[in-house]
Image 1 (cartoon, helix red, strand yellow):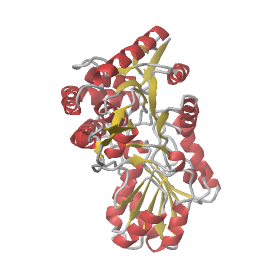
Image 2: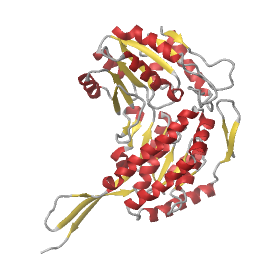
Image 3: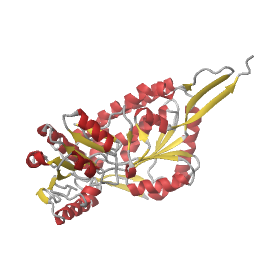
Image 4: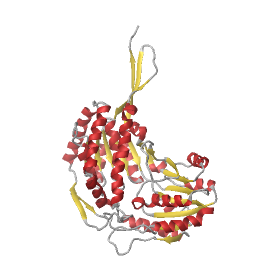
Length: 459
């Protein structure tokens, strides 16, 4: 069997790759486990040096890697280059804190005893990565996993398998070979791999339904999983917001990467005093997007990676309008194009029970609702089964602190959105997932604690 990757801009074939057979999968696990036995004994300081060597592949091949991202999933080439650059920011931060974070915790002296807590690697980590940020999502797992002493099997999305090849080329043949191996697998093969007793941890980015299935599987073996499952992230525009700044950034947060981001702004609540002005300014900004060939540097919005997503977005728009929302712009696929384009869309007066306000869109939709005050905004923002990020747009630090306390999400922003700071844990509430990547907590999720309790028999 073979996997065929289709360019979402022109529907042409990008590449055809064979699925791994069972013998190849078995060899990959054996090699990863053998590499783990050697790698875990390498001092952390040396691991840092070796991982840094692997990252040089991304520097040398940055043009080719960015092009592969664009061809496979339609991200505008300028944004693909930004993603390559962002790989180094995230990796370098994790490299900078690895030795301190992974060092043993030494307990206070106790006569006759030596006590410490070690952070030991898990073993072979299976990373099931998504296509929307095909470099960011794996690097969030691969670098801390390797630095912690683990090895990685990477099953990249069927939409972006060439990105998996780049990670294997970067980290697969270093001082210790087979630290990272990519595998082209179907869902059934992935399930069998999770069941293999040599897999020690699973890191998954994808749908809630996919996360639920993986969590059921890992529960059978009492191993853990890191799950990033998306969101329906709200923004609140308070009465004191800098409106021009807010509109520009909220719309970028909703439409960057054609809205295909787990932490994209997906619903906006605006204080009634700014509501009409917000809509008017949003229309002007949304009309500036240029849809077209994602390899053209002038293109600011590319096609959606999935053709099926066009139907999902259309359903959400139609449902909102049927419930009384006003369609101010867009609301349909781009006519006359073979690409998977959906027009940037502005919806006003959207009821909070509309599909677009309750379910992840993964497209360039901006649904907006007026609210009377901060209290109503908090209630609306928490009316969701998700909880990845939320943003409040205000000049008042006390207001921002109030929303940070009362809104239930893994990250709360003030005057920012749709951004990961590698010094902060990336984590979700409720159906947005479990576990953490990045920051010192990303290391803790990829290690286990070992208590060292030695009696010295000193007189």
